[in-house]
Image (cartoon, rainbow, N blue to C red):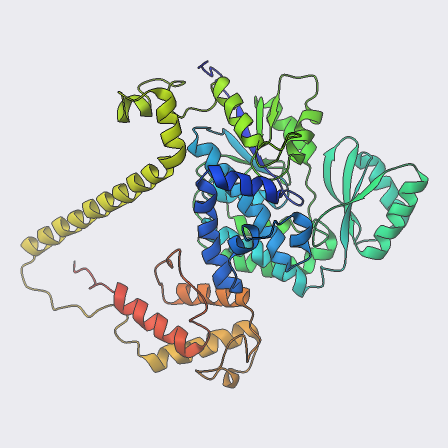
Amino acid sequence: MPENTSTGPSTAFVFPGQGGFDGAALRRAKETYPQVQRVFDRLDSATDALFSRRISDVLFGPEPTDLRGLLAGDSWLSQVAIYGAGLAAYEILTDQGVRPDVLAGHSLGEITALVAAGAFSAEDGVRIVAQRVAVIERHDGIEGRMVALSAGADRVRMLLGLLDDPLLAVATENHDEQTVVSGPDGVLDQVTAIAAQLNIGAIEIDAPFPFHTPALAPAAPEFEAYVRTLDQRRLQRPVYSPILQRHYEPGEALAGRLADHFVQPVRFAAAVRALHRDGVSTFVEAGGRAALSKLVTRLTQGSDVRSLPTLALDDGGRLALDATLRELRAAGLADLDGTSGSGPGLAELLAPTVASDLFEAYWKAHGHEVRERVRADAEAFAEEERRQGREQVQVQVQVQEQEPAPSPAPVHAALDRDEVLGELRTLYAQALEYPEEVFEGGAQLEAELGVDSVKQVELLSRVSQRYELPPREADFRLAPYNTLDAIADFVIAELERHSEPAQAG
């Protein structure tokens, strides 16, 4: 296998946004690559808690599902499907040994890129995508659409200037002859009519809302407040933003940046050219269809750039991902067995007597299980080391003490259930601007008080912060906690389960 000797960034993964879903290709990938099931199992736990519906049941049920079918259903379906397909493609590629130097996303795909880079959990990614939809619906953002015009951004801005509508905007700049505009339905009808007179083609974008428009400005603060309640972690891979036209900083607060996306345009063409100037010569589209890989090919025409799709079907009905992985291995960019790097590879370390092609087939089918086992064992080992370290410190403290310290009371012991229930009633009343008296302990939050599941997740996150509860498990389900009585019991149980004696000295 040829060695990749590039010293700068070589490979970029790009994650698609609106329109980036191919149901047939995703089903085909699921038959071969177990990572698809693994990713969607995690997403199912989030959609089940939020909507009492598993996204897998929709995408992998008995009937084939395409993007148009998803758009005809609940608004969150298409958005989570696009996000999940991108995340599944990322897991497949990295499990097959492809190591991206940088990640980038087109609109919605930027959320996928940040999750892939480790900023949020896969489940919180679903919550972000779902909340993005929910706040737009609450602020009447549904009254509009997006249209792609076959003209450059400067010419399109001149066209929009003729109409002088403050809610009409350039949403994305895809290449020199394609610009997407976003805005209210009525004014977009005028845009397409003028474009037709100028021989500018116009195509409707498969999207549930008009994204990247000033019309969404009222929804941004609510979305930002919600994202702030989630657990953000340090980026593990570089992420370049076509919206910000720069890399995210490793510890940058992301809630405000993601809220800014509501109104700021996506300058995808400029981003691709910037990454190419930085040394990226291979772009892999991690997600459905092949729209971004075609855009990259057009934007870098005449160069040596390689642009590869994944979850799309070619003209012969074959999954593009298979050919992409073969090409990446041939180029030395997929390091499954370590032969393209320095030092011994996985095959040599783990199974030196097994032929490389057989090891590759084994790793394709079971590599994720090995990785998960190693991860779990390593975390258990680290926890045991920490525990033993704490015991060592406690022993040393006891030896140094002259007098025995009084037995400390457990943390939160002073809290009782009535106190917790009262605090919850105040917290929920203030957040929802309801009178406190409506929050009787047994009142159903959604059925009786109209608090939707996305808002319930946000409020439960506030509760966790208020009482310093540990992160919820990945399989946590919202449904059982639909009254303040149930939430109070949950808080008390979590405090009792996780409280430890305060350390003396």
